[in-house]
Length: 405
Image (tube, rainbow, N blue to C red; front, side, top):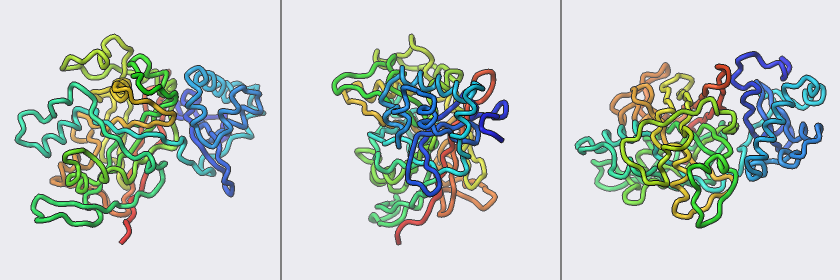
């Protein structure tokens, strides 16, 4: 089917237009692409052919120049792209610049500056609390309802969807072990998350206010925060996650601009504690997003976590991340934290789905508590869009491969 003739209701229609970076077979040249249906438009070539003033931002091997250009440029480029793929008079010029999605190689779409991961789902936090602190009076830690908890990760190990994930090795010590041992993780897990991509930087010493979120954040993508639970459990006291998280974080090859998700904006869950002024979003536009996520292991859907249940919003996370004066850089990535809903089939990690291994998942190819070598994990999602047409998010997939012997 020609690229202009996208079927009605396609989640990657002209209402979506996510950005990525691609190369053609036999070529090392990378350039910005925009997805339409099952095709990729060479955005830089189209901009040049049609005389766009933004051609220099799009004919690049990474999205970073576009990210840094700011909201006016983001809106102008999106408006132009929509016209290029919908107005019949552009068809003769633009159609030859499309390539079948199946024929291109997709790359990490932006150069990741800093990486931060949060812990924003109350359902997830309560499940984890019940698993590891079953006798506690409250499954949440005392600070959880007052601030978005997070940690700094490793930007250099953020990889694009489709990249194999090598099973990590490290120290681990089970409660019954007399001493720690070293070896491959035996409790390898996933975390279904949403990542937010920062475009416009900020100055050190100047916090970013809640209302300024859309001026700094370009878009979002699906994110899988791979986690070695046994390594994490032994190392995390007292400073938190380290080697159990830093070996790999997978992101989609497609970044969905926030402008494509206006129809999916929703209010977050009701606040149960008074918030300090810099986090108080009572007078702000709804800060949540209604994203419907699916988690599949070896092609079998095991969970469908709803992002609309997240207690802390992306705007609150950005405000908290910078309230101490920490600066933003173009290409900063921050993860929402594991997305989990209230139902058993809405849990976003195997830790919760199997209740720390107590209740194995029944898959067509056998039982699972944690991931085995060869397992393929795929995250996919969609959001409500204009006129009832869903907005598709680029999937994230990764296959577990054995570590070094």
